[in-house]
Image (cartoon, rainbow, N blue to C red; front, side, top):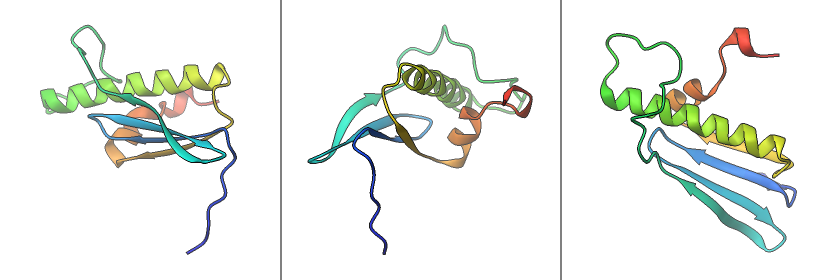
Length: 104
């Protein structure tokens, strides 16, 4: 196994559709930075267009994924981290990614 060297201001983001944990690399090791949970998503819109066969749970997870992506975007533009390592299950990652037409 290869040692992974990460700079001090690297943010490690580990997410599912139900929660996210953020860790920050520090000179003395990895420390938990934040923990996000969905909370009340009733007033939030889902991510993208909803397929008719999507369950309520899947809709809530898609909505939470959209919120996580928006929060990461704000952190990036506020220069709160230099590098980002994002770990997520395929469904969550797919919901967090912008549609092809929105990418620059």
